[in-house]
Length: 105
Image 1 (tube, helix red, strand yellow):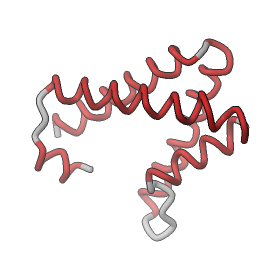
Image 2 (spheres, one colour):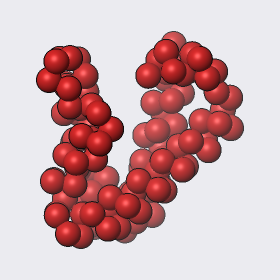
Image 3 (cartoon, rainbow, N blue to C red):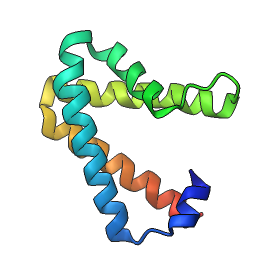
Image 4 (cartoon, one colour):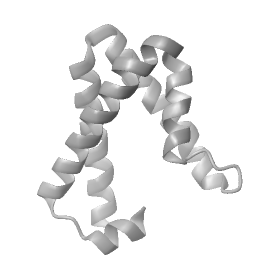
C-alpha cells in the first residue's frame, strides 16, 4: 500500500474523497445489506477477505488482517446500535487516518 501511495502522491482532498467513497460504499453494502443476511462477524471476515488481508503466506499481512476483522466488527456494532451513519463516519475517519499515516511516511 505504501508503494501505491508513493506512486499516486495523493493530495488531502483526494484522501478525503477516497475515504468518503470507501466509507459510504462499503458500509452501505456490507452493513446495510450483507450483515443483515449473514450476521456481524461473518460479514467482518468476508470484508477483510475481499480486501486480501488474510494472507497466510505473509505473517505481517495476516496479523493486520486479523486486526481489521476487529475493526470491521466494531463498524458492524456501530451499525447495529447507532445506525448506518455511525458506521460510515467511523470507516471514513479510519481511512483518513490510515491514508494520512501512509502519506506522511
